[in-house]
Amino acid sequence: MSRVYIGLGSNLGNKINNLEKALIELKEIVKTEKVSSLYESEPWGYKQQDNFYNVVVEADTNLTPQELLHSLKEIELKLGRQEESVRWGPRVIDLDILLYGRKIIDLPGLKIPHSEIKNRVFVLLPLLELNPELTDPLSRKKFSEIAASIKDNVRIKKIAFFNKEKWNWNENI
Image 1: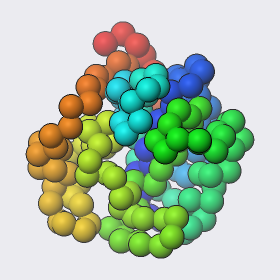
Image 2: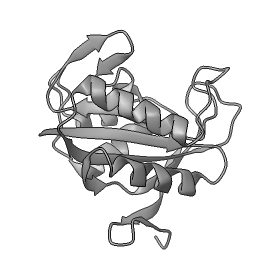
Image 3: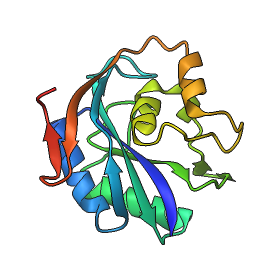
Image 4: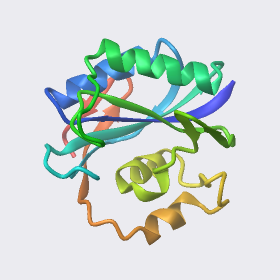
């Protein structure tokens, strides 16, 4: 089994429902260990769109990185993801492999660690909530140090805690 971290995001429709459906689908392909709190963030890259809801999942898998990527793409399609007309544009659901153990992979369509992980506070905060000791396999720096050095002006806030028994978020923060 390999420990993986998967980022989930949504900014179209019922965002919480989209993420909950994705979590249910993920349970079919990985052994979910932890789910971060739910974060709301301003859009990154393309600004003319609704805010995103983001979460990170820590899980174990027997799938290869390529098999996991394929399964995540199938979940996105099943939940209504359409091809974007704008890079980093609006989407019903987005699933990204952030980390796959300590592996470093650089293939067309698959970069692990995720190529933008070091630039995105909305990924780093939930990731560090799950495991504050994580380090970047490429630079060997702690992600907490990387997060502290980001000069990103995207606002992000925690809006709900995950309730693993009910498999949803408790919005009473």
